[in-house]
Length: 296
Image (cartoon, rainbow, N blue to C red; front, side):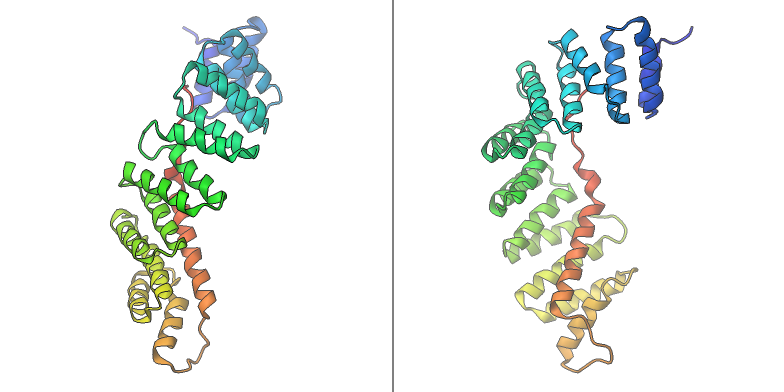
């Protein structure tokens, strides 16, 4: 038995063959131009391909199925992808009428409000979404980032701690707590958080990142002996040699003697340690996947 155009379109979409998925769905629409399933298949594939008519197709689905939440979710996502923020917000508001606690819609509305300059509304939407639970949800994660962008590290830390408490084994959540404590000068709390990360992050070679962060904490405390001990520990396991300059700086400070090669200065060492922390963050970026979103 041969498969239908809709089945073929869905199969190609699942295989990430978006152009072919769109082509098959469009071919099916020639015979059934108002079939909402084929319109959805064409529109969703079109969004992935950057097709100009994708939004029109998904808008038609919403017209045909106004009481289906996924119709508005797909339309909102497509409009947001085109930067049509106000229109996307309208679609997500309609989605919330159907599913009042939809985390993805509330999160999207939070970003739309923030983009339009309504910081209070943005926080309200994200707080409402985060209140829905779900561990380290996208809403909680986005709330941390939004507070950071607003220049509100205290509020960002409070949100980060909520995220880490909800997902105590999540390294990226723990990193937010550690970084924000460091930014706020709460060095004891930062040190404890980075020690916790050493326990959590068991990826090969990642212990160096936590050690670099702890070195920065000790430099800010002006405890050079402890910083030097940590640098030597890091250098012993640093297969990429990223600790060499930090260790040279600290050994020069400890000995007081002029080395043959001038070591990096204090600011250069702090920049290197900051770059290591940023790299650690990037390695865990995949942990912050949006857990909202529509069905297949």
